[in-house]
Length: 511
Ligand SMILES: [Zn+2]
Image (cartoon, rainbow, N blue to C red):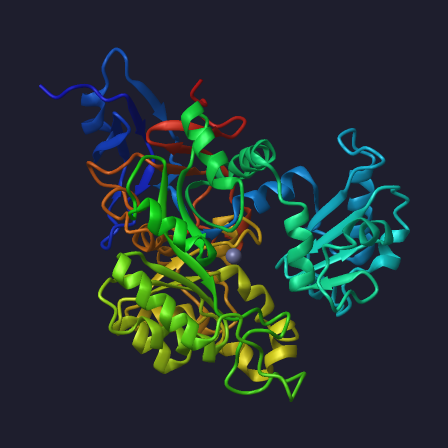
């Protein structure tokens, strides 16, 4: 006699997303884990007096999404402050800031903050500047961050407040780049309570879009402590794997952090930049930018320093996660990774990985953690064409990576945090080498992320014994491949607990 389940979801299309992707009608959960998959008839045998049985009326159930590259406090900022990511024009971005200034939470002396604008989406090349922000009529300082956070626009009041914090080089009409932007971010970085508020807001967003695990890349942040505060208080719904910036490496070594030891909040590895971004022309390329024939980008961390870092991490048995966008930066990462003992070191973004680099990644067991949502810059007439010309078709070649046998994990980088938006971009990419089919794209956001976190025995597919991290979709992505981004998330479960339930959906959130 088998013990009854805690929860049985029936009349569903349960995709395990395992390599052969069998589809089942029902899934049963006990003690936070999947106990059986099968037909509704079979699994009704596991329904006892205390079992919750939910008829999903044909909805699709998938393993929960793993967002393998995000910064959850930044996601939270979009929720808490003015969200400029959906603005279609300069005027709309300013209107969103003005609306935020009228909110109760913003006093006349407070910083008025906006996050996530992208002037290239407005068909413009000039970022917001001090003159734009002066029209807002907010007496306190104003700062608007471009979505890559490498650039921030501030008004005169903000410049006064920041005096002393800003690096030499100053600003260009209120536009601060790189080190200047970092100084503003540091000035505004939240304390422990503030970080917890942002993480809670980010978490609400995450589970509402089906995310059950995040890999969060953190630097000089109160977020690690705030995550652990939440875990202890029982209000951390997500599974979290933290990657600490390389300037924390001494501390990591000293306290002996080991990969994936612990509970909901685990250690994933060390993060470093190697280069910058295409948008800022700081991604390191082997050939010049199309719109700046003298520029090939820059090294944020030079190859010899990268190699020394990799060697040290290898002796500590800690993985490295290296941000490399340009082809020359990706090559430098692979030079540093090859012949290291441990597997599945990560390269973040790998936007312009060459054919040779793709082969090397496959051979060296390197995970490509890529952002399918970056495809929105890859179309004809887009940002990548401006910067890279015809090389725009060589960016984020998902098909090429997968066909070569590279482990591909999807991450949003918070632009926006929404796996279904990313899957949509992957399925509807500009060119064949950049495109995946629906199953492949979903797998990169589930099993791919699990493998990137060395957690595929626990999460990433659905099978008896694995964690019951599930997402219930309102519609089938296979049934509407042209508009996957608009599919609603009916419910999200982590360890069998309902952590998100859409209004009108058959699930109820656990108390
Ligand atoms: Zn990032």
